[in-house]
Image (cartoon, rainbow, N blue to C red):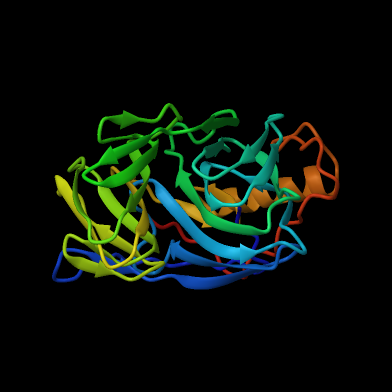
Length: 324
């Protein structure tokens, strides 16, 4: 799942302190993506109050979404300077990209695509999929590694039982479980499932800032209630994060990392460092791929997809400003 907004907007972010409990609530906004899949997602990152959690720069949460009759069909589209983290709770998506990777995205299995200097990929729900439910997250690559050659990885994390909860660590390390997937800055990403009336205390790296995205159920983060579909944010300094569930089972995604310490320019599916760089990425995509001048250019070509790549939206009539 990627950002297919037909009119992607710039988000000007100003840092704000957390609430009295030390937890900042990042509420979702609904974003209609339109196009072939006509889906609406709940976007919690980026937003005006906060644009980054570590290197995590984008969180779209969707479903359960009925796709039984029309399916989901996302044509080939580009990315630069980031990693896409695909994580499903239900459904199945077929992934193809210009590195030649062809894989199925399934619940509990990480699909990680490192765009680096440039890549394109397509995403299509499989014929047997009637509903999709999951999250698409991006991490921004640091300046020193953002032009790395693109590549694709798949990792199936083990389920760790911890204080009555089930934890799957898909990026970084947590609770003694370490993912083999590549990261370019210190990061963590995990799914945590809690039975009703369960409280757990998770040791965390105090250098990290953390976010807890609530997918289902009632969750308190360090005694602060986090509304469903929102992110609870905690600044660096904590050594333990306490999570508690209510009367029903709860499921969350825990993300975190060292503050990136860099400003980025993010528009549509491109991450760069300046307005001019993002404009150049768009120009190159339109020329090399949409107009077909260079199939071996920056973004390569996707084999096996039946259809045309996705044209880039028009740029806004303002300079894109960095954030972070």
